[in-house]
Amino acid sequence: MKNIIVTSLILLISIGYIKAQSQDQNQFKHKVLGFQIDYPKTWTVNSVDDYYANLDKIKLQDSAFDNMIKKSASIPFLFISKYKEPYEDLNPSIKINTRPYGNLKGKSLTEILNIIIPQFEKLFANFKVQEGPIEIKLDGITATYIKFYYSLKTKEGKEYLSCSEMYMIDKGNYYYMIESAQKQDESNLKDPKFRDILKTIKLN
Image (tube, rainbow, N blue to C red; front, side):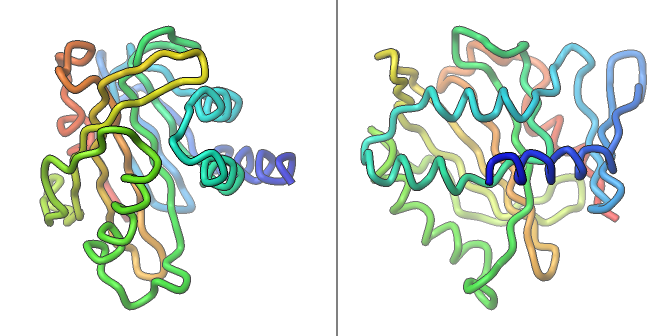
């Protein structure tokens, strides 16, 4: 099954491409999804193996739920980070994927986030919503947004005071799920801020 998933992702990525947008920016375009984003040239586009390796390092509070989540995790079609993986500290990163509404069809993205939040509370220690869910604009694109703090624990016994932001964008039968992560004190991400990168998103 994993080989099938990886093959599917390779096919998706082959439909997208990366090009130099300016002296300081690269641009990722996904032809099938009509998705486009600019990001700093100093950032790294990570592989499927990097994604699985990162996922495997995390230790969640509920071990049974941990296994289920990792087996059913939706692979992002774009996973970029400030530093090249593997990275010993908490690496500022952005993951973007699509998810079908499925049996949640008819519910708003705010309602879906309110369903997800209790699950996060079970998975992460010291989970606390800082802002949202609210609707915001990303350079004209309406997104449902939430920001939360939590303690990210690893199997090696390390613990990071983490901050994640999620942006969900409706596309009819599916929605974009955009996740960013960094330290709570933002000491590992000065410029550009995540929001500055995400404001370059364009949807066709």
